[in-house]
Image 1 (tube, rainbow, N blue to C red):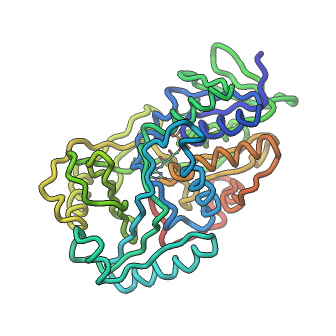
Image 2: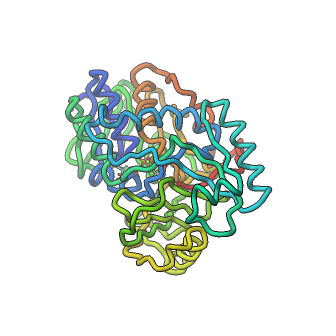
Length: 382
Ligand SMILES: Cc1cc2nc3c(=O)[nH]c(=O)nc-3n(C[C@H](O)[C@H](O)[C@H](O)COP(=O)(O)OP(=O)(O)OC[C@H]3O[C@@H](n4cnc5c(N)ncnc54)[C@H](O)[C@@H]3O)c2cc1C
Protein backbone atom coordinates (compact mmCIF):
# COMPACT_ATOMS: atom_id res chain seq x y z
CA UNK A 1 0.00 0.00 0.00
CA UNK A 2 1.50 3.38 -1.01
CA UNK A 3 2.09 5.55 2.06
CA UNK A 4 1.73 9.34 2.15
CA UNK A 5 2.33 11.89 4.82
CA UNK A 6 -1.03 13.47 3.88
CA UNK A 7 -4.00 12.26 1.81
CA UNK A 8 -6.71 14.74 0.77
CA UNK A 9 -10.25 13.71 -0.18
CA UNK A 10 -11.84 16.20 -2.60
CA UNK A 11 -10.26 18.34 -5.33
CA UNK A 12 -12.21 21.58 -5.11
CA UNK A 13 -10.35 24.81 -4.37
CA UNK A 14 -9.90 23.94 -0.67
CA UNK A 15 -8.38 20.53 -1.44
CA UNK A 16 -6.21 21.71 -4.34
CA UNK A 17 -4.88 24.57 -2.24
CA UNK A 18 -4.16 22.15 0.61
CA UNK A 19 -2.28 19.86 -1.83
CA UNK A 20 -0.20 22.80 -3.03
CA UNK A 21 0.61 24.09 0.44
CA UNK A 22 1.56 20.61 1.74
CA UNK A 23 3.70 19.78 -1.30
CA UNK A 24 5.49 23.15 -1.16
CA UNK A 25 6.75 22.09 2.27
CA UNK A 26 8.27 18.94 0.74
CA UNK A 27 5.80 16.49 2.31
CA UNK A 28 4.48 13.59 0.23
CA UNK A 29 0.80 14.22 -0.49
CA UNK A 30 -1.95 12.61 -2.58
CA UNK A 31 -5.23 14.26 -3.56
CA UNK A 32 -8.18 12.07 -4.56
CA UNK A 33 -10.93 13.67 -6.62
CA UNK A 34 -14.07 11.82 -7.69
CA UNK A 35 -14.34 13.69 -11.01
CA UNK A 36 -12.15 16.53 -12.27
CA UNK A 37 -10.47 19.08 -10.01
CA UNK A 38 -12.68 22.14 -9.65
CA UNK A 39 -15.65 20.64 -11.49
CA UNK A 40 -18.10 21.12 -8.61
CA UNK A 41 -18.84 24.33 -6.65
CA UNK A 42 -15.30 25.66 -7.02
CA UNK A 43 -15.61 25.81 -10.81
CA UNK A 44 -19.16 27.06 -11.28
CA UNK A 45 -19.55 29.79 -8.69
CA UNK A 46 -20.23 33.50 -9.11
CA UNK A 47 -16.54 34.38 -8.91
CA UNK A 48 -16.86 36.88 -6.08
CA UNK A 49 -13.67 37.46 -4.10
CA UNK A 50 -15.28 39.37 -1.29
CA UNK A 51 -14.21 40.05 2.30
CA UNK A 52 -16.77 42.77 2.92
CA UNK A 53 -19.75 41.39 4.85
CA UNK A 54 -17.96 38.21 5.95
CA UNK A 55 -18.93 36.90 9.34
CA UNK A 56 -16.28 37.87 11.88
CA UNK A 57 -15.51 34.21 12.60
CA UNK A 58 -14.40 33.95 8.94
CA UNK A 59 -12.49 37.20 8.87
CA UNK A 60 -8.99 35.90 9.75
CA UNK A 61 -9.32 33.32 6.95
CA UNK A 62 -10.72 35.91 4.56
CA UNK A 63 -7.84 38.29 5.27
CA UNK A 64 -5.22 35.57 4.77
CA UNK A 65 -6.92 34.44 1.58
CA UNK A 66 -6.91 37.96 0.17
CA UNK A 67 -3.16 38.12 0.48
CA UNK A 68 -2.90 34.81 -1.42
CA UNK A 69 -5.26 36.04 -4.16
CA UNK A 70 -2.97 39.03 -4.71
CA UNK A 71 0.03 36.76 -5.33
CA UNK A 72 -1.63 34.05 -7.44
CA UNK A 73 0.62 34.52 -10.44
CA UNK A 74 3.73 33.83 -8.38
CA UNK A 75 2.06 30.96 -6.51
CA UNK A 76 0.27 29.05 -9.27
CA UNK A 77 1.57 30.60 -12.51
CA UNK A 78 -1.65 32.45 -13.44
CA UNK A 79 -3.68 35.30 -11.95
CA UNK A 80 -6.84 33.31 -12.85
CA UNK A 81 -8.34 36.64 -13.99
CA UNK A 82 -8.37 37.92 -10.41
CA UNK A 83 -8.87 41.68 -10.42
CA UNK A 84 -9.20 43.89 -7.36
CA UNK A 85 -12.12 45.70 -8.96
CA UNK A 86 -13.69 46.48 -5.57
CA UNK A 87 -16.92 45.27 -3.97
CA UNK A 88 -19.68 47.82 -3.52
CA UNK A 89 -22.40 46.90 -1.06
CA UNK A 90 -25.52 48.98 -1.55
CA UNK A 91 -28.11 50.32 0.87
CA UNK A 92 -31.67 51.36 0.08
CA UNK A 93 -32.59 52.85 3.47
CA UNK A 94 -31.16 54.81 6.37
CA UNK A 95 -31.32 51.63 8.48
CA UNK A 96 -29.20 49.75 5.93
CA UNK A 97 -26.69 52.62 5.79
CA UNK A 98 -26.39 52.37 9.58
CA UNK A 99 -25.73 48.62 9.25
CA UNK A 100 -22.95 49.30 6.76
CA UNK A 101 -21.46 51.93 9.08
CA UNK A 102 -21.54 49.52 12.05
CA UNK A 103 -19.90 46.76 10.02
CA UNK A 104 -17.21 49.15 8.79
CA UNK A 105 -16.25 49.97 12.37
CA UNK A 106 -16.00 46.28 13.32
CA UNK A 107 -14.13 45.24 10.18
CA UNK A 108 -11.47 47.85 10.96
CA UNK A 109 -10.35 45.71 13.92
CA UNK A 110 -9.41 43.04 11.36
CA UNK A 111 -7.49 45.49 9.18
CA UNK A 112 -10.24 45.65 6.53
CA UNK A 113 -10.74 49.17 5.16
CA UNK A 114 -14.21 50.03 3.92
CA UNK A 115 -15.24 53.38 2.49
CA UNK A 116 -18.78 54.63 3.00
CA UNK A 117 -20.29 56.32 -0.05
CA UNK A 118 -23.12 58.81 0.58
CA UNK A 119 -26.16 59.68 -1.61
CA UNK A 120 -24.45 62.30 -3.80
CA UNK A 121 -21.17 60.44 -4.29
CA UNK A 122 -23.00 57.23 -5.18
CA UNK A 123 -24.74 58.99 -8.10
CA UNK A 124 -21.55 60.74 -9.23
CA UNK A 125 -19.33 57.67 -9.08
CA UNK A 126 -21.77 54.95 -10.16
CA UNK A 127 -24.28 56.68 -12.48
CA UNK A 128 -25.57 53.34 -13.77
CA UNK A 129 -27.27 52.47 -10.46
CA UNK A 130 -31.06 52.49 -10.04
CA UNK A 131 -32.98 55.20 -8.18
CA UNK A 132 -33.68 53.19 -5.04
CA UNK A 133 -30.01 53.24 -3.99
CA UNK A 134 -29.24 55.57 -1.11
CA UNK A 135 -25.55 54.83 -0.62
CA UNK A 136 -23.09 52.06 -0.08
CA UNK A 137 -19.83 50.78 1.28
CA UNK A 138 -16.93 49.92 -0.97
CA UNK A 139 -14.06 47.58 -0.24
CA UNK A 140 -11.41 48.53 -2.77
CA UNK A 141 -9.29 45.43 -2.27
CA UNK A 142 -12.13 42.98 -2.95
CA UNK A 143 -12.78 41.81 -6.48
CA UNK A 144 -13.53 38.92 -8.76
CA UNK A 145 -11.89 36.02 -10.58
CA UNK A 146 -12.73 33.32 -13.11
CA UNK A 147 -13.81 30.26 -11.09
CA UNK A 148 -13.18 27.88 -14.02
CA UNK A 149 -9.46 28.58 -13.79
CA UNK A 150 -8.62 28.60 -10.10
CA UNK A 151 -8.80 25.06 -8.64
CA UNK A 152 -7.18 23.47 -11.74
CA UNK A 153 -4.36 26.06 -11.51
CA UNK A 154 -3.76 25.11 -7.87
CA UNK A 155 -3.84 21.40 -8.81
CA UNK A 156 -1.30 21.89 -11.59
CA UNK A 157 0.98 23.89 -9.28
CA UNK A 158 0.71 21.16 -6.63
CA UNK A 159 1.65 18.54 -9.20
CA UNK A 160 4.72 20.59 -10.15
CA UNK A 161 5.72 20.56 -6.47
CA UNK A 162 5.48 16.75 -6.36
CA UNK A 163 1.87 16.12 -5.25
CA UNK A 164 0.08 13.07 -6.66
CA UNK A 165 -3.23 14.39 -7.99
CA UNK A 166 -5.61 11.55 -8.86
CA UNK A 167 -8.73 12.52 -10.83
CA UNK A 168 -11.68 10.19 -11.49
CA UNK A 169 -10.74 8.61 -8.18
CA UNK A 170 -13.80 8.44 -5.89
CA UNK A 171 -13.01 7.50 -2.31
CA UNK A 172 -15.38 4.74 -1.24
CA UNK A 173 -14.40 4.59 2.41
CA UNK A 174 -11.64 5.58 4.80
CA UNK A 175 -10.74 4.60 8.36
CA UNK A 176 -7.96 4.68 10.94
CA UNK A 177 -6.53 1.24 11.68
CA UNK A 178 -4.83 2.27 14.90
CA UNK A 179 -1.53 3.16 13.20
CA UNK A 180 -2.46 5.13 10.09
CA UNK A 181 -5.32 6.19 7.86
CA UNK A 182 -6.41 3.79 5.13
CA UNK A 183 -8.22 5.31 2.14
CA UNK A 184 -10.13 2.96 -0.16
CA UNK A 185 -10.38 4.07 -3.79
CA UNK A 186 -11.86 0.78 -5.01
CA UNK A 187 -9.02 -0.53 -7.13
CA UNK A 188 -6.47 0.13 -4.37
CA UNK A 189 -5.97 1.57 -0.89
CA UNK A 190 -3.63 4.38 0.11
CA UNK A 191 -2.15 4.85 3.59
CA UNK A 192 -1.55 8.21 5.27
CA UNK A 193 -0.29 9.73 8.53
CA UNK A 194 -2.80 12.59 8.20
CA UNK A 195 -6.10 12.87 6.40
CA UNK A 196 -7.76 16.03 5.09
CA UNK A 197 -11.47 16.06 4.22
CA UNK A 198 -12.29 18.75 1.65
CA UNK A 199 -15.21 16.92 0.05
CA UNK A 200 -17.45 20.00 -0.27
CA UNK A 201 -21.17 19.24 -0.10
CA UNK A 202 -20.19 15.61 0.56
CA UNK A 203 -17.84 16.56 3.40
CA UNK A 204 -20.23 15.57 6.19
CA UNK A 205 -20.46 12.07 4.67
CA UNK A 206 -16.70 11.66 4.79
CA UNK A 207 -16.73 13.07 8.36
CA UNK A 208 -19.36 10.52 9.39
CA UNK A 209 -17.01 7.63 8.45
CA UNK A 210 -15.04 8.76 11.51
CA UNK A 211 -18.00 9.34 13.83
CA UNK A 212 -18.06 13.11 13.25
CA UNK A 213 -21.79 13.42 12.65
CA UNK A 214 -23.02 16.86 11.62
CA UNK A 215 -25.90 17.99 9.44
CA UNK A 216 -24.84 19.51 6.15
CA UNK A 217 -27.58 20.64 3.81
CA UNK A 218 -27.14 21.60 0.15
CA UNK A 219 -27.83 24.87 -1.61
CA UNK A 220 -27.72 25.83 -5.29
CA UNK A 221 -27.30 29.59 -5.88
CA UNK A 222 -29.03 30.60 -9.12
CA UNK A 223 -26.63 32.20 -11.64
CA UNK A 224 -27.19 34.03 -14.94
CA UNK A 225 -24.89 35.66 -17.48
CA UNK A 226 -25.64 38.22 -20.20
CA UNK A 227 -24.11 38.71 -23.61
CA UNK A 228 -20.92 40.84 -23.55
CA UNK A 229 -21.73 44.54 -23.07
CA UNK A 230 -19.49 47.60 -23.39
CA UNK A 231 -17.56 47.83 -20.14
CA UNK A 232 -19.28 50.13 -17.62
CA UNK A 233 -19.18 48.53 -14.18
CA UNK A 234 -15.90 48.18 -12.30
CA UNK A 235 -16.82 46.96 -8.81
CA UNK A 236 -18.79 43.82 -8.10
CA UNK A 237 -22.14 44.81 -6.60
CA UNK A 238 -24.09 43.42 -3.67
CA UNK A 239 -26.99 44.66 -1.59
CA UNK A 240 -27.79 44.58 2.11
CA UNK A 241 -29.62 41.29 2.68
CA UNK A 242 -27.83 39.67 -0.27
CA UNK A 243 -30.85 39.17 -2.53
CA UNK A 244 -28.93 40.09 -5.72
CA UNK A 245 -25.26 40.34 -6.66
CA UNK A 246 -23.62 41.28 -9.97
CA UNK A 247 -20.26 41.69 -11.59
CA UNK A 248 -19.03 42.55 -15.07
CA UNK A 249 -16.28 40.29 -16.34
CA UNK A 250 -13.23 41.47 -18.23
CA UNK A 251 -14.92 40.19 -21.41
CA UNK A 252 -17.97 42.41 -20.82
CA UNK A 253 -20.59 39.83 -19.78
CA UNK A 254 -22.54 40.66 -16.65
CA UNK A 255 -22.87 37.72 -14.26
CA UNK A 256 -25.56 37.93 -11.61
CA UNK A 257 -26.84 35.67 -8.88
CA UNK A 258 -30.12 35.73 -7.00
CA UNK A 259 -32.12 33.12 -5.12
CA UNK A 260 -31.67 29.36 -5.21
CA UNK A 261 -32.15 26.56 -7.70
CA UNK A 262 -32.29 22.90 -6.74
CA UNK A 263 -29.52 20.39 -6.15
CA UNK A 264 -29.42 16.62 -5.88
CA UNK A 265 -26.21 15.68 -4.13
CA UNK A 266 -26.62 11.93 -4.75
CA UNK A 267 -27.08 12.23 -8.50
CA UNK A 268 -24.52 15.07 -8.81
CA UNK A 269 -27.07 17.26 -10.53
CA UNK A 270 -28.24 20.82 -9.97
CA UNK A 271 -30.42 23.14 -11.98
CA UNK A 272 -31.63 26.74 -11.83
CA UNK A 273 -35.36 27.42 -11.59
CA UNK A 274 -37.15 29.55 -14.24
CA UNK A 275 -39.21 31.57 -11.74
CA UNK A 276 -36.07 32.33 -9.73
CA UNK A 277 -34.23 33.40 -12.89
CA UNK A 278 -37.07 35.75 -13.79
CA UNK A 279 -37.16 37.29 -10.34
CA UNK A 280 -33.34 37.61 -10.33
CA UNK A 281 -33.42 39.38 -13.71
CA UNK A 282 -36.07 41.77 -12.40
CA UNK A 283 -33.88 42.62 -9.38
CA UNK A 284 -30.78 43.01 -11.56
CA UNK A 285 -32.61 45.51 -13.82
CA UNK A 286 -33.91 47.40 -10.80
CA UNK A 287 -30.36 47.74 -9.50
CA UNK A 288 -28.75 48.45 -12.90
CA UNK A 289 -31.51 49.68 -15.26
CA UNK A 290 -29.35 49.57 -18.39
CA UNK A 291 -29.48 45.76 -18.21
CA UNK A 292 -33.08 45.84 -19.40
CA UNK A 293 -32.05 45.31 -23.02
CA UNK A 294 -29.28 42.82 -22.34
CA UNK A 295 -29.64 39.29 -23.65
CA UNK A 296 -29.40 36.49 -21.09
CA UNK A 297 -27.25 33.79 -22.64
CA UNK A 298 -26.96 31.14 -19.93
CA UNK A 299 -28.14 30.18 -16.48
CA UNK A 300 -26.66 27.58 -14.16
CA UNK A 301 -26.09 26.60 -10.58
CA UNK A 302 -23.93 24.19 -8.56
CA UNK A 303 -23.95 21.97 -5.50
CA UNK A 304 -22.77 23.76 -2.37
CA UNK A 305 -22.70 22.48 1.21
CA UNK A 306 -24.68 24.56 3.69
CA UNK A 307 -24.39 24.51 7.48
CA UNK A 308 -27.28 25.58 9.70
CA UNK A 309 -25.50 28.65 11.07
CA UNK A 310 -24.14 29.70 7.68
CA UNK A 311 -20.51 29.07 8.61
CA UNK A 312 -18.20 26.34 7.31
CA UNK A 313 -16.57 23.61 9.37
CA UNK A 314 -12.80 24.14 9.39
CA UNK A 315 -10.44 22.42 11.80
CA UNK A 316 -9.76 19.22 13.72
CA UNK A 317 -11.97 16.14 13.85
CA UNK A 318 -13.99 15.65 17.03
CA UNK A 319 -13.03 11.98 17.27
CA UNK A 320 -9.89 11.10 15.37
CA UNK A 321 -6.48 12.64 15.80
CA UNK A 322 -4.75 13.56 12.55
CA UNK A 323 -8.02 14.11 10.67
CA UNK A 324 -8.92 17.65 9.55
CA UNK A 325 -12.12 18.89 7.94
CA UNK A 326 -13.05 21.88 5.76
CA UNK A 327 -16.52 21.71 4.23
CA UNK A 328 -19.98 23.29 4.22
CA UNK A 329 -18.84 26.69 2.97
CA UNK A 330 -22.40 27.97 2.49
CA UNK A 331 -21.53 30.21 -0.46
CA UNK A 332 -18.24 31.64 0.86
CA UNK A 333 -15.60 29.07 -0.09
CA UNK A 334 -14.29 30.60 -3.30
CA UNK A 335 -12.82 33.65 -1.60
CA UNK A 336 -11.78 31.61 1.45
CA UNK A 337 -10.44 28.56 -0.45
CA UNK A 338 -6.79 29.56 -0.94
CA UNK A 339 -6.31 30.23 2.80
CA UNK A 340 -8.31 27.16 3.81
CA UNK A 341 -5.69 25.04 2.06
CA UNK A 342 -2.87 26.90 3.77
CA UNK A 343 -4.48 26.46 7.19
CA UNK A 344 -5.13 22.74 6.61
CA UNK A 345 -1.52 22.22 5.56
CA UNK A 346 -0.40 23.78 8.85
CA UNK A 347 -2.78 21.60 10.84
CA UNK A 348 -1.51 18.49 9.06
CA UNK A 349 2.21 19.29 9.22
CA UNK A 350 2.53 21.41 12.39
CA UNK A 351 -0.49 20.35 14.45
CA UNK A 352 -1.88 23.89 14.57
CA UNK A 353 -2.44 26.94 12.42
CA UNK A 354 -1.25 30.51 12.62
CA UNK A 355 -4.74 31.64 11.49
CA UNK A 356 -7.54 31.67 14.04
CA UNK A 357 -10.38 29.42 12.88
CA UNK A 358 -11.74 28.54 16.32
CA UNK A 359 -15.19 29.98 15.49
CA UNK A 360 -15.47 27.45 12.64
CA UNK A 361 -14.72 24.36 14.70
CA UNK A 362 -16.88 21.27 14.26
CA UNK A 363 -17.34 21.34 18.05
CA UNK A 364 -20.03 23.98 17.64
CA UNK A 365 -22.26 21.33 16.07
CA UNK A 366 -22.86 18.04 17.78
CA UNK A 367 -25.41 15.34 16.97
CA UNK A 368 -26.48 17.44 14.00
CA UNK A 369 -27.65 20.40 16.07
CA UNK A 370 -26.12 23.82 16.17
CA UNK A 371 -25.57 24.48 19.84
CA UNK A 372 -23.79 27.77 19.59
CA UNK A 373 -25.56 30.07 17.18
CA UNK A 374 -23.42 32.82 15.75
CA UNK A 375 -25.29 35.54 13.94
CA UNK A 376 -24.21 38.42 11.77
CA UNK A 377 -26.66 40.75 10.04
CA UNK A 378 -24.56 41.27 6.92
CA UNK A 379 -23.87 37.64 6.23
CA UNK A 380 -24.98 36.16 2.89
CA UNK A 381 -23.96 34.19 -0.19
CA UNK A 382 -21.24 35.14 -2.68
C1 LIG B 1 -23.45 28.81 -7.89
C2 LIG B 1 -22.50 29.13 -6.76
C3 LIG B 1 -22.07 30.44 -6.56
C4 LIG B 1 -21.14 30.73 -5.55
N1 LIG B 1 -20.57 31.98 -5.48
C5 LIG B 1 -19.53 32.20 -4.64
C6 LIG B 1 -18.85 33.44 -4.64
O1 LIG B 1 -19.10 34.33 -5.43
N2 LIG B 1 -17.85 33.63 -3.73
C7 LIG B 1 -17.49 32.67 -2.86
O2 LIG B 1 -16.59 32.91 -2.05
N3 LIG B 1 -18.09 31.47 -2.87
C8 LIG B 1 -19.09 31.21 -3.74
N4 LIG B 1 -19.70 29.99 -3.77
C9 LIG B 1 -19.23 28.97 -2.87
C10 LIG B 1 -17.94 28.31 -3.35
O3 LIG B 1 -17.99 28.01 -4.71
C11 LIG B 1 -17.71 27.05 -2.53
O4 LIG B 1 -17.86 27.35 -1.15
C12 LIG B 1 -16.33 26.49 -2.73
O5 LIG B 1 -16.05 26.34 -4.09
C13 LIG B 1 -16.24 25.14 -2.00
O6 LIG B 1 -14.99 24.58 -2.32
P1 LIG B 1 -14.69 23.13 -1.81
O7 LIG B 1 -13.33 22.79 -2.29
O8 LIG B 1 -14.98 23.04 -0.35
O9 LIG B 1 -15.83 22.21 -2.48
P2 LIG B 1 -16.04 21.71 -4.00
O10 LIG B 1 -15.59 22.68 -5.00
O11 LIG B 1 -17.45 21.22 -4.08
O12 LIG B 1 -15.07 20.46 -4.07
C14 LIG B 1 -15.30 19.29 -3.33
C15 LIG B 1 -14.82 18.16 -4.19
O13 LIG B 1 -14.85 16.95 -3.44
C16 LIG B 1 -15.10 15.89 -4.35
N5 LIG B 1 -15.56 14.72 -3.60
C17 LIG B 1 -16.65 14.63 -2.81
N6 LIG B 1 -16.73 13.38 -2.27
C18 LIG B 1 -15.65 12.71 -2.74
C19 LIG B 1 -15.18 11.38 -2.56
N7 LIG B 1 -15.84 10.48 -1.79
N8 LIG B 1 -14.05 10.98 -3.20
C20 LIG B 1 -13.36 11.87 -3.99
N9 LIG B 1 -13.78 13.14 -4.18
C21 LIG B 1 -14.90 13.55 -3.58
C22 LIG B 1 -16.17 16.48 -5.28
O14 LIG B 1 -16.21 15.77 -6.51
C23 LIG B 1 -15.71 17.93 -5.41
O15 LIG B 1 -14.96 18.15 -6.60
C24 LIG B 1 -20.67 29.69 -4.72
C25 LIG B 1 -21.15 28.39 -4.90
C26 LIG B 1 -22.03 28.09 -5.92
C27 LIG B 1 -22.49 26.68 -6.12
